[in-house]
Image (cartoon, rainbow over all chains, first blue to last red; front, side, top):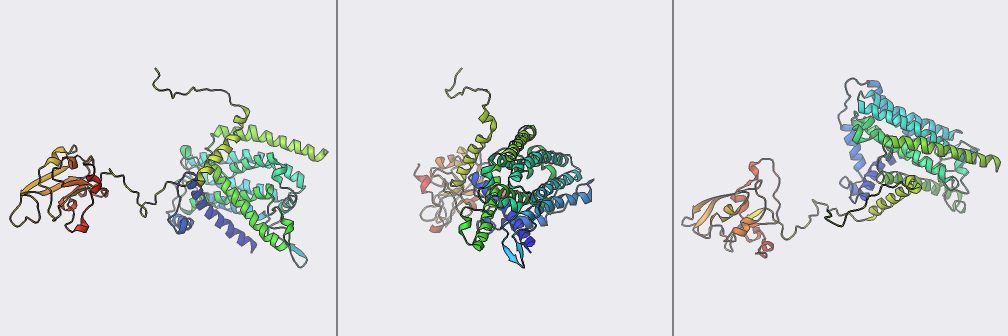
Length: 328
Length: 176
């Protein structure tokens, strides 16, 4: 039940992210943005979806049919899987001696699960790009995979201080550990590295080289049409939602908000859900804000930033916080 | 040789550590984009809102009638001669008996064509006209599918007899 609700919410937010993105882009460029479909253009995502579904299905000659369909499916599947472990409330409901929480799966290796699923996401892009039988798609896919591998390392290392601090890989425990103070204040550098890597992981500007139009036509989805293309584009927004949720959970206290203990427990849970949503929406906005501010990196700059700047910084972070937690 | 004093000394100095960090620059950029979010755009919602033309706008031509509804044009051909783009073609004719309510003088234009693809909307025809017959208005020449549809004939150019069908050219008249 909870899974279905979260599924619908995730898809809804992702759909409206496309509208929101176009609006934000328009406002930042002193334009109006979509305003014809429905009041304020609010029906635009539906119009786009209908358009995508009714477009012609096309498959290039020489492409691998099964893998060609598998690519966007994997991309969408892995994008949707990530948000399953996000805790939306503290363990609160008590039915039959068992405590329930607004969380689909409170697995004890929550962070590892997220990293595992996110790194699976690259297969969707890689398979889609390779099976298109197009050199631009292949180049985009290769770029995507090397970029994701490069930044996943620094990303993984940057959260080790959090794991050391909360002494758990379980996301609900990590959120509970932020009851006093949010992790972003405890580990600002870890947050910075994680944020930069999150941008790279979701293929958002300034790291959107896999779909760099000026060099690669459309990148890995050059040959895709119809809803298969829609799945690729959509999975990017779902990923954005998921990484916003992960950032809010790991660094911004999840459902915690100042003055939470003053409210009665039931109200606190509801407000907590709303607060977590607000944090997620803010980070989605932040993703867009960055997109319409910073131009794309060159590929060598991207690799240098990943391997020569973020990696050493992340390792240094692990060493320093490791020393702090073991000796102090 | 120095043409203006606006030239800028270009320097290629090493970036400082803060500059190489790139983050302060990003914050500055974010501030710029966010300030633009709060600005009011200059957009005019076109089909619903029409932006006003300037008073000297020169659009589609009109052939005027006088107060009694008679055509002013006497087919003198000065407009056609003055036209730098040679867009105007006139065939003159003599006014017959019983047509006094249609044409003001004895001679009138049987045909009056303006090729809107050739016209450069310079307004010289209007300047040349001794009879206050041709004016450029603030109407826009509509787009079309065929080249032939851009040749406006007399029926497209002459204004209506009824007073409410007349085209207002008072803005243009003030200049003369």
